[in-house]
Length: 247
Image (cartoon, rainbow, N blue to C red):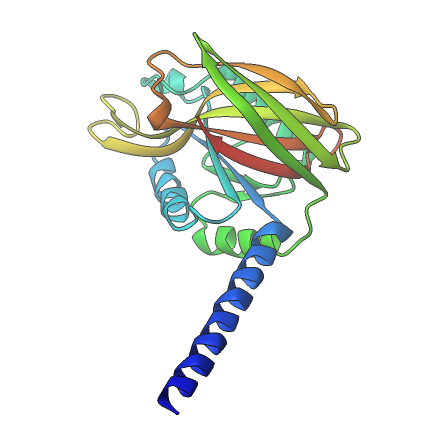
């Protein structure tokens, strides 16, 4: 009798685990959230936003949440040059101002899936927005393969399924973590921690399948970096599919 109960319990437990696995997989596959933080080491309001996305990044390793920190360069004029900043990332933020009908840009700003924006330190708003977008069906599916580092480039193959009309493929080389000691400007004397820093950002005309060649930053070490790629509508800014990969 005891063996019989043990067998029934084992079957029930196996059934529960299998159902739980299926439910988790379905939930993960349904939607995604691309979180873009526009930040700067020269902005005293930015470290709290950096901390919020770092917390979410730590919690979301097994979820389709893709965080990219774009360091803008327009704060550099105030005495401290952010070594991670570039005018290209400032231009991307200005493009969002056009897509989202904003009168100006600011830091820290978060944009989720190219369609919603708010102050980057608003943790509750960010969590609620991510939760809602994870429940929506993705319009497109994107995958990367054959990722090969060759000198100062990484070459890869991609496949895009679903609605990719009027989309472009964007591939980011992400430095997973770094710290900086700021010596001047609004954050003078502080040591700042960053996560998910965009170090290279490449726009690729998208087809159902194809290849891309992406520049790597100086001092690249594969263990400290990852790739995030996503599809974005060039008319509206809406992001329709995303993925990431280790090197």
